[in-house]
Structure formats: structure tokens, C-alpha cells
Image 1: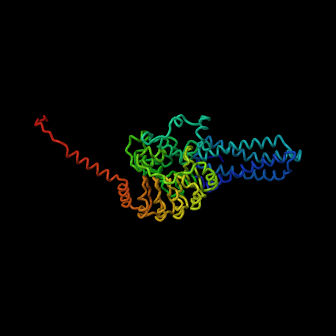
Image 2: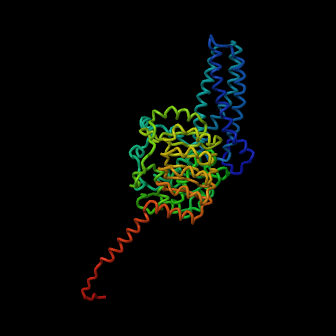
Image 3: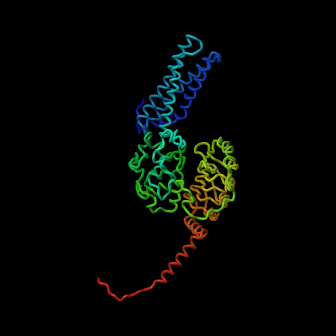
Length: 501
């Protein structure tokens, strides 16, 4: 039963095995309820609920056994850390078997006395609960990768526990100029979106992305990363599949890379999948450099010394919106993150999965609209009508609308956002006419329109108009005029001396 690495495992086993993550929560819940009921039943002044305890225990044994069998089926194809997987399977099997042993111990204890504390039975139940904690931790590690529960701990706590690396502790905000190609850009993207399924604890398809050397080895297909050829690289191919495609990686429900990160990965592979080197020493297209700036979180003022439009509507103080945010976080389809401890600015994100972000969720953000600087609602159910709420976000800097049903009409609501510098419209229904609503945005630096109906000629015209609006074209004309003056001022001095060949 514990055989794994079966590439040709019957499909029915894989079908049943995928129910393991859903079913495993039942025995955990039942065991917890059983512990509470047994505590009440064994108390001197507690209610006599021995029959209820017996019923819960019986159902616990049944669902625990089914969950264990489904877990074994799920592991048949392999792709996990073998040591961790073996321990998880054995301990998970023991946890299910112990339920039947608890039935025997409880029957023996109740044959002696009707209720009260039984050392053998209650001790075995306590030991089983401890075992469940270990089993659950191992299961979480197999599914989400090591450090899943601790990776978002605040830095002071990580320092206290000795969990933060010297590199992380030493470096502050890093600029594009000083960033290392792989360590500061590529590896963090893999770590955020890939390593939980392709790392030391779990390596689906025999692919590991937790180091440069392992990433270059590729997986079963061998062409995961083809230096110099993004189109032949399996990694890029799968990233561009529809979110509900079976071959899409990461699959639906897992953390997804945004279009900036995909653009960085494509550039990296096109550049030869560089192992190391400073970004500042390389020639990088402006669109990719903008994506790198966003990935590193480099402050905009450190990137360009452009005139920043005045903020017409100041942000509310954190104390004024804290209670509103606490209320909004109760919504199943709204995630809110404070950008920094010393700033009232927030980032709003629509989660992946069944609880899709929609127009109603967007409207609920009205009380904190002035404090939103980043809105990630791609792959959501937001429509043109919902974007009316975005027009009331004067401090919005980044807006993700990829793979939504947004059309040209919806973009009319974005025409007056003074600080918007990044807009992702990948996979939407926008056309050339949409660009007319965006040409007046004073700070727009990155616009992603892959797989839309916007033509190349319209995009080039849009770029030219933006250059004219920012005065760059006039600057170029001034430079050309100065070059002409320099050439006109040159003087020819001929000494008449012939030089030897």
C-alpha cells in the first residue's frame, strides 16, 4: 500500500486520492469534539453524555480510516520528500488505527464504571491528539512546503526565534541597480509561487526550483527552462495557459505569479537564464525594468525624478480606518494588507478559489478608498459597472484587472486617476479605443495588454502620444538641435603634415 512513484497509477486511485485534503479535516474535528465531550462526561458535575461520546468515537474511527486510505492513494504518483512522506503515512495510519483501539479501551473502561476518568483511555486519547498535531504539520509541509506556517511571521519574532537569515536581516530595501539577477529577482518568484510544489518537500514531475542548479536540470520533460528560448521553455508555456487548464502551473487555487513576474521570467530565460550578476550591469527593456521595480518594491521616487502630481485627496489616518478594515477582512473574498507599519496605505487583493472578488466587494471598499494604493483583482468577476468604485481611489498606483470581463467602457472610470502607474489588462476584452481613456494618465509607466484586441500599431501610437504628453519628444528635439550647434561650431585645423602609412 505504501508503494509510490507509480507514474502509471490507475486514474481511479488518483481521483479518489484527491478527496484526501477535503476529508482529512473530519477526523481532526471529530477527535477534538470527542476530547471536549469526554472531558465533560468525566467531570463530577458534568452532564452524562457517554452515549454521545460513543457515537462520535465510532464515526471518528470510520472517517479516519477512509482519510488514511485516500491519503495513501494520493501519494501513489510520488513527487514528495520520501522521508517526510513515509513518516506522514505511517503516523496518519496509526492515527486512524488508534481510533479503533480507543473504542476497545473505552468499552473496557465503561464496563468497570459508567463514567469518570480512566487513565488508560484518556491517556491514549491525549496521546492521539498530540499525534494528530504532528501528522497535520507534516501534511501541511507536504502540501505547502516547509516554513508555510512561519514564513509571514513579523521580522522581530523571526529574529527572536533565530529564523531570519543573516542575508535577510542585513539588507534593507534593494534597488534594481544593486539587485542580483537570480537571488533577488528570480528565486523569490519561484519561492512565492512554485517551490511549495517543486521543492525539497514536494517535487511534482521530478522538478525542483529551490536552487539554480536544480531548476536548470528540469523535470520529467527535461525542457522546463531552455536558456535563450522562452517559447520552448515548459515553464513559460504553462504560465500562459488558462487558469482552469489542467496543465496550468501553478494550478488554480495556488498562489499565482502576476504579469510583472511572468515578464521577468521571460526576460531572464531570453537573456540566457543568468545565474548571477547585478541588474545594473545589464541592458534591460524599460517595460521589464518597471516590472523589476515593482517586484523589488523599490520606491518610485528612487527610480525617477519626475514631477509627481499633488494628491488632491489625502489618506485617512490609520486609526480612522482600522475598524473598517477589521470589518472588511471578515468578508471571504477580500484580503487587505497594510503596506508598511508607518503608513496608512493598504493593498487589497481578491483571493483565488471559489470566493471570487466581484462588484459588490469592490463597492464595500468605499470607506477606505483614499488609502488604497494597490488593487489586485485579476481573475475575478469584476465588471465595467464595478469599476465606478475605482474612480474614487485617487491614490491608486497599481491596478490588476487581468482575465476579467472588463471592456473599453469600464476604462472610462480610470481616466482621472492621477497616480496610477501600473495597469494590467492581460486577457481582457479591451480594444484600440480603450487607449483613448488612458492617454491622459500622467504617471502611467507600465501597461500590459497581452491577448487583448489592442493592435500593435495602436500601441505604438499610444506610446508616441504619451511621449509627447510628457515632453520627452520635445527634449529629444532640443538634444538634436544642440548636436547640430556643436557640429556647426567645430573648426578644422589642417597642419599639412603627412603621416606615414
